[in-house]
Image (cartoon, rainbow, N blue to C red):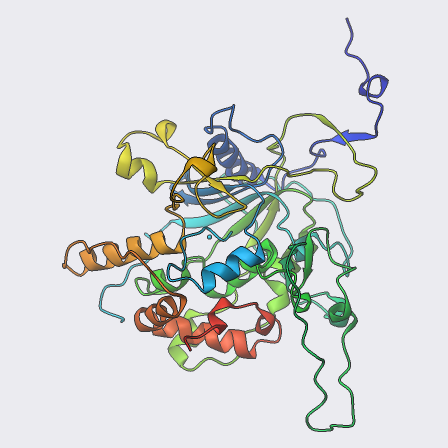
Length: 439
């Protein structure tokens, strides 16, 4: 019997779960495939059908290895985040995730690559201000990727949001708006508001502008953009490294438009402000990875229904479960192969580990990906590297203590961050919890 036409039994509009698309090159498909294979190690009964997946992959001597992976879309509410800022135990939730002679760098020949199953939320999904073209396959060796093509962007629509930073919208956030300030140099002259800052009716679904106060967790586009400036290693790990770690490529599945993605993840930065020293100028610069598409599909479900009442949001991510995996888990606890690697399941609504019946749990279970856990792991690693042995785990952490620790251990990295967040024309809009100081 011939297969039936889906139109014959589907009363609602429908579309393919993932549109047919072309890969940029063989290497992009390889990165995507090892990432999807790692995703499929999650037990089928726990594996979400409609979700987003992101990985960091290492390439060396022709081999690809997934180093870490995140699965899911939910994030902690503004009210919960504020509670943690004021808490004695800062960093116990997963929000989304002095110098010495010990310095490390990647082994020669090792490169880092990022995969995301869909275009990063935020600016990379803002399909405006550029002419879109289809991806074309480049026939090249399976261990090579195209050179980055990042032409300067004509910022002709900055006032309309072309380079804007965006945050994930929390519909339940309590908004506290500040009165508009006048021009201090000319008190009689009112400050003009850019159209992009006047409202968020132009932003992609689920996002808003920083000025609304309806969210503080930056969109994925902004985070990757910041990584292409400061590196993917974070502040504390920077104290171990000779220079920041950068990704060489970014492979994207659904909704990729190359010119839009380039703008979002690096090119809108243009250049960095002058840094305090020549050494920092040499170490820190804007990284432009190769942006690639892939023909490998995460979701092979075929046809899904389209929601006529919510255009632009055909794929709905209802589950609050988020999953995480990183390569050190099985090394530490299983001592076996990748096939036995466990996943952590995190409740995206609370930032704690997911439990089937949370009301029966007397104390929330803290993820090893929480800021608090990662800081403890870092301090232990640093102590061992310095020959001092393991430290007793720190039970509590306040926000101002964390900020002081970063400045003590990674003063150069923190000084670069401060210059960027105060002087860069784009990144100075960044929503920083670090602005809250001890009173």
